[in-house]
Length: 334
Ligand SMILES: C[S@@+](CC[C@H](N)C(=O)[O-])C[C@H]1O[C@@H](n2cnc3c(N)ncnc32)[C@H](O)[C@@H]1O
Image (tube, rainbow, N blue to C red; front, side, top):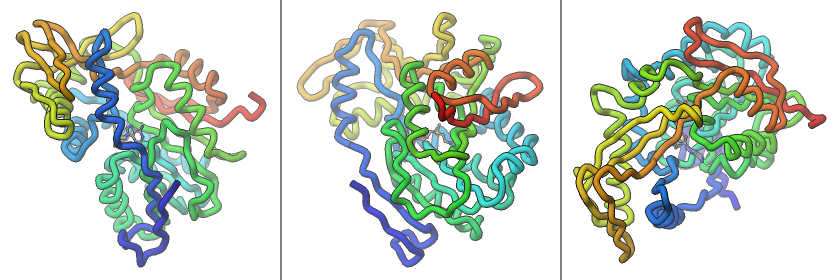
């Protein structure tokens, strides 16, 4: 079921439409209960992004250690004329997991004549505010917002979109947050909203020197630590858990075998999280695994894309080979 508010006289006066697909909210409790009861313990990263988490993530993107955002933005700027040629006139950009809709500005500037933009995010208030800001700055682009979970596929057919080629923009290496089978399912789900001629522009972080990776997820200023620990604050304040946030510290680890950075919350002393009448005991050093960020080589990314039914039409990287952007098109014969 979807709620649509279409037109500039809507409550969100600056955007063309707001489509609320009501991503289920009640799952936070269930996922945390399951995650605390599992061995090893883990919680899905989607719960990082409340108002505070989204604001902390924005700060992370500006940290000196976090090369991801600035490298991807530089790269987008460098390849702008090629992107504009590939997208063609009047493209409609759809961004799953749009967050603060910052990078899209570089892409819209590169394209020059996009006719529409749809920000899609699970974090409703942050999404609307970001799309309204964008609408203020890009009055010639028809801007819409969709509150949805992009892992459920993209439901776009009912939206009042301009006719141009659809370009699904999935930057920030968000794809790396998923286990390989889930990443494949997410990419395959994007295809459900695509028609012949549409494309995906996706950013994927590269395998590189271990220290660069570990530092990018454990900055000296402690912002990533605050981002990770905010999850415990949410569990305490929103789910009514009893816990001591100070008993945990943030840690980032490079897992060579699985080619990923892992973020953990590590118990510094024997401690407990009590949730819904159940007590979960953490011994010293026990961890709660909160995020994976898989890294790719051009070959491993190509294998992933092909397994999800796409052809890699073009691949770009910065000179230091820190980060890559890929232009994918559905392989309609697959
Ligand atoms: C890391 S931010 C990326 C923001 C932006 N695309 C960029 O690269 O700067 C991830 C965003 O994805 C959203 N998100 C995470 N999982 C999601 C899901 N399953 N469905 C919809 N949005 C999701 C979060 O709310 C957050 O705003």
